[in-house]
Length: 149
Image (cartoon, rainbow, N blue to C red; front, side, top):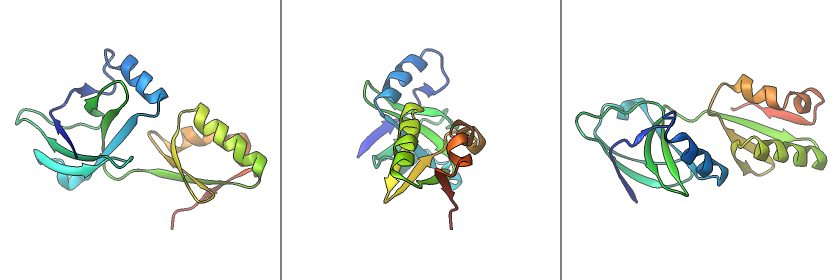
């Protein structure tokens, strides 16, 4: 369990951006999705999107915001997101399409994981922005979106 006390800053803080950029290149960004029911609490325990068990405590004068930075070192950062994670499921229709989709996901630094032959992308912004980046693959049928049940 990782004990996290206090808020370091925000992911948009200019002084932190270079450090976060380096951590992101090493796939070290972890999101801690905080459900609405937990927002007013000063102590809670949750797991990041990469499986890190976190015990969070905040001072009375601290308020979490979407994008609060709770942990940062050279290899890992833990950033708060409000609500449940938003995901996008994709599947490729051929081996060539799989390689192209994987190249795009890696080159664009998408936070993704595989579930069988499905690529599950964790969305940090509007879905339309992600779709636009691989629009040709979707348009030619190489990549298909899978609706969540």
